[in-house]
Image 1: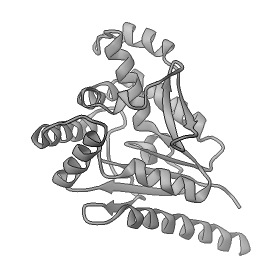
Image 2 (image 1 turned 135 degrees about the horizontal axis):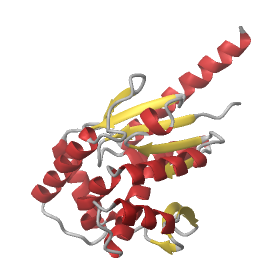
Image 3 (image 1 turned 90 degrees about the horizontal axis):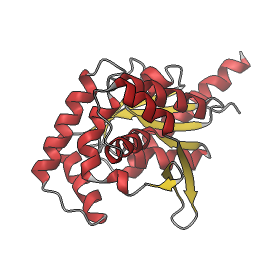
Length: 233
């Protein structure tokens, strides 16, 4: 059976990553968290004092950045490695969240990351989540879902994620961060956060993770059935 590309786009803290991971596991597909790639670049830029407005320094830095995903056998999850160092926990911290949208809107950064993502998904059989998967990275993805949720729900979820990792952040600060990121992501010139015309909308404000996963799997099943029927004609 032909393997598909499943593109899951949407706003921050809608449950994209959790849903995408579970969908990939159910399908036996690879999972790629593209947001983590931009977070890793942000971490590198901050640690090396890269000026976000200096194209020469940015281009030089991008040549030194190598991002990989490796399976943690204990937690059974893919974790992000930056130049051989596990940065999975560090890139999820609030100080990275405060800067990642600024970094991800830099054209050179987007071009570099999109190129890597396209290589990762070239063989199909992949679930990718991010902001521009269905519009820029894989506009030919067979299944596209655009996830959203109201900002208060997203903020509470994000606050709980941070608490689980020992970081206490006021809810108002998280709401402000999400609103800022939404504005930057949706108004940037390079690959803005927009719903692809053929993407199904999934509002996760009042549904469970299981319901989110079922929704995406239903889209996949429908597409596979459609392809099978087309082959029989």
